[in-house]
Length: 200
Image (cartoon, rainbow, N blue to C red; front, side, top):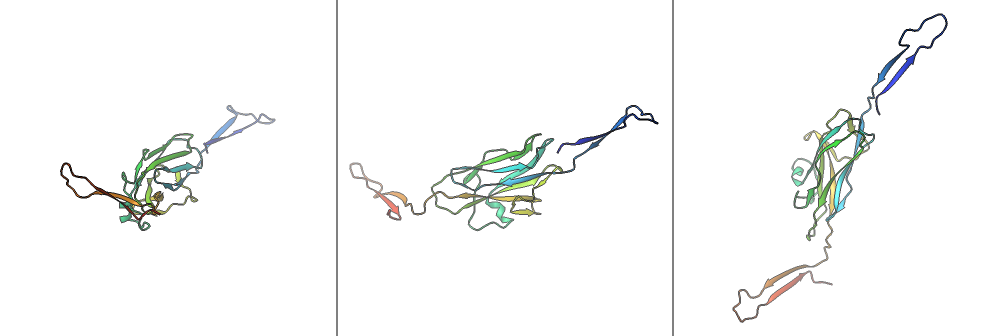
C-alpha cells in the first residue's frame, strides 16, 4: 500500500496554551513487499502462449524484473522431463521483450511466445521461463505460485511451460519418388506416391 501519515493535534483548553503549529505529523512508510505470481498455461502448436505475471498490489514506483525463455540446453544443468527437447526459433519464438517493468499502477504483465506449428508427430515439448532477478527489494515471489525450482546455480527461479503436439499419429506420412530417373525425352515419367501407414 501507499505510505501514510498520522497527525496529532492539541486542542485549545483551560490552564494551558497551545503552541503554533498546534499539531505534529509522522509519516508511516509501508514495509510490505508486493508479491509476484507467475502462471504459464499449456498451449498447442500454432497457438500463442505466455507467462502471466501478476502483482498482488499495484506498483507505487517502477519495478523491473529480468527474465528469459530457455530451450532444451538448460536441461544440461537442471532435471527436465524426458523427451521434451525444444529448440528456440524452430519450435517456438518469443514475441515480447523479456525485460519487464511494472509502472506505477500496473499489476499485470504478459510475456508472449508463439508455439510454431509443424507436421511432425512428437512428444509434448518443454520450455523454461526463468526469472534471474526481481530487480527490487520491494517485491518477492508469491508463496502460492507454483514454481518448478529455485535453483542456486541460476540464482533465480524457473517455471516449465508445455507445448502440446497437434499432429495425429495415425495420419499417414506421404512421400513421393520418381521411378525411374532420369528419363529420356519422349519417354513416360512415373512417380510413386507412398502413404505410411496405409490410410484406414
